[in-house]
Amino acid sequence: MDKRKALKYAVVLLSAAVLFLCSCGIRPGGRTENAAETAVSTAETETEKETEKETAAETETQTEAETETAAETEKETETETETETETETEMENAFYSMELDEELKDRIRGRSYKDDCTVPFEDLRYLHVLHKDIEGNVHEGELICNKRIAADLLEILQELYENDYPIEKMRLVDEYDAVDEASAADNNSSSFNFRFVSYTTHISKHGYGLAIDINPLYNPYTKMVNGERSVEPANGVPYLDRDKEFPYKITRDDLCCRLFLEHGFNWGGDWENSKDYQHFEMPSSVVKSLYPD
Figure 1 (tube, one colour):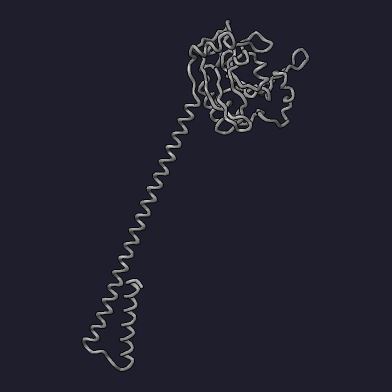
Figure 2 (cartoon, helix red, strand yellow; figure 1 turned 30 degrees about the vertical axis):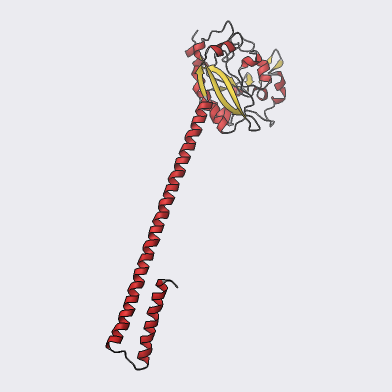
């Protein structure tokens, strides 16, 4: 039995003794009565003191617990902040742009950067990104584009990556000897390649690095030419029916298309005389402002 319970028990016994004597017609005299009352009072005082001590101890324990909880919460917050900072650093290291150095110039010279290219190297930027395929596998990707859209592409591609939007391949078109048909047939997403618009003498916006094709095999270009339907890439014919469901398909309301439209690009899927479902480009007004000739 602890001290507090013992004191309470003593008080009960003394009280009971006094009541018993009184019920028997015996009234404790002077000192006896005073001693009993004093004992009862002392016991009650001791009980109150013990109660106060226990309350103080409980308060101290509670304060210590609250302090520990606050410390743990602060530590968790610091950990979360550190994790967020590490993630941001990782993203910065994975998604970046840079001017073309001599090694990059050598990679594209005579391929995507042809002898008659009118765009100076200084206007081009190399982009390094991450992307995920349809199975969720992470791949490193690289693009060359015009510096005018470099920041937009980095922002768009990072958001697509963070939202698990699938892009199968993203290599420099130079790995396909800058042959668009070969690159598109392999479902490779790319941007800069100095060339002309199909069936015209106009420089393509890809030729300025102001356009990008995403998952081109599943989002082909198509147009009627001399009464016959032209499809690029040729193996993209099965994906002309946009009512069918298949992987990597771009629609106007999907995340990819929405992001490009929000950043001021036009989508080839909106064209009337032809359809280029893979294609996003800067408006002609932007091209003319940059390259008036």
